[in-house]
Length: 89
Image (tube, rainbow, N blue to C red; front, top):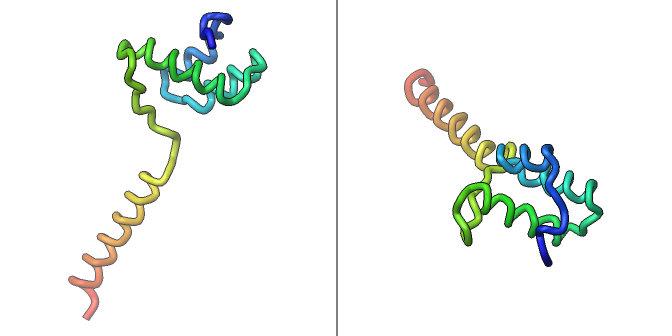
């Protein structure tokens, strides 16, 4: 697939630059009619080019996710352990 057959819109570029890969794929599909696989590939290539690291896909954090939930659970457990250790008789 030639990724240069279309121009990326400002919205797609802004989403890629801010790390919102899923939003960029969705918007590219709406604008061009590409399938999911083709749009994902095009966004991956675009992200690599814009990060200046050819051949390496940048780690783009997803909004929310399991990592944030895990951090919250660990924090709550730590607070409970401290509370019961010092204040519960």
